[in-house]
Image (tube, rainbow, N blue to C red; front, top):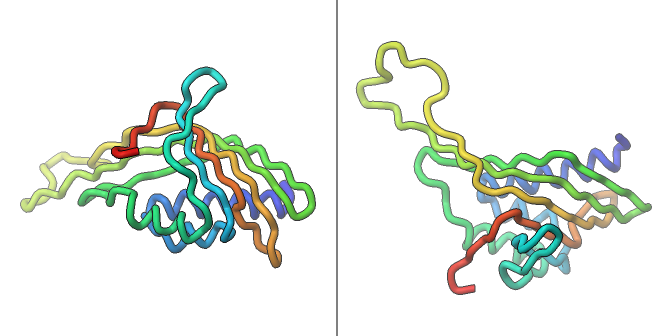
Length: 163
């Protein structure tokens, strides 16, 4: 893997970590000011429909993360995993397509009296809740890769109230 491919893969890694932390500033910084982000739900084997109007620019992405994503419950978090990255680099332009799965993580609350005798191992649940593909265009600006277009292709219907 070339260093460009590795840097592009790290942009996607920073994107999912910012999502998991609900850090709009960090996520928005990965996008250009005119980037277009669109989310789609699968409607057939190779067909999708838009979930919501597009977001334009890193500031809009950051705002959406900070204001529209539900906060994690106490003891809860999410964990986005990407895999099977297909990366194409053409000079200062690049494209990455990667599969993703999102897990909901909920830790058990430690009892006031401590864990029961014989308790061992991780205490809580991990549940897959979303899957799909990230289909992303990037541009190298001053040596740094930035997202210019990002399509979230969800495998299942995704409902946003009021949209």
